[in-house]
Image 1: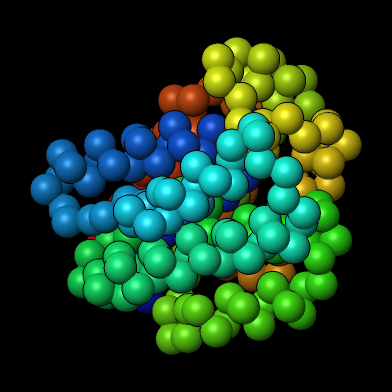
Image 2: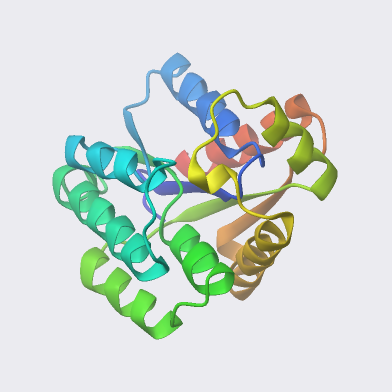
Length: 205
């Protein structure tokens, strides 16, 4: 494995992935290790513009349009950020290709072959080294979403849909268990922080 890996944080809303990626950022800064952090949708300037369009509560896109907008955002990130830093810096990604498969395929029913084709076309030789999959139960999902002051349209799905998406993530992770670590986000934040930082430390040594 490259000592400058691509490390991805996946999970549905309220699963704690964004908090954990912040902890990794602080960890790397303290060690003075070079890295970049991006999110999807978002990241590069063009991708951030697309993010606003996708998540806007007034957007009424169909599921195919959503898919293509996510792919457009990814295309910008790969060209402007990821490819330039690949194997040169640690790359942390808040959501990536697994989110597209979990949400757009398992959640919304878009053909998996189309999604895989588009991802392969965009990524080419770029490989994800490791993924943390953050899992949350229904009770905590409801509590955490209720605490959010500003909900975007992806924060407003039904619990049933979130369950389908999370089950999709689990199916993806179970196919390559050596490249995934499931994080039980129902446990304490500090407990998970130690688990994640220990694994990150091993990945970059």
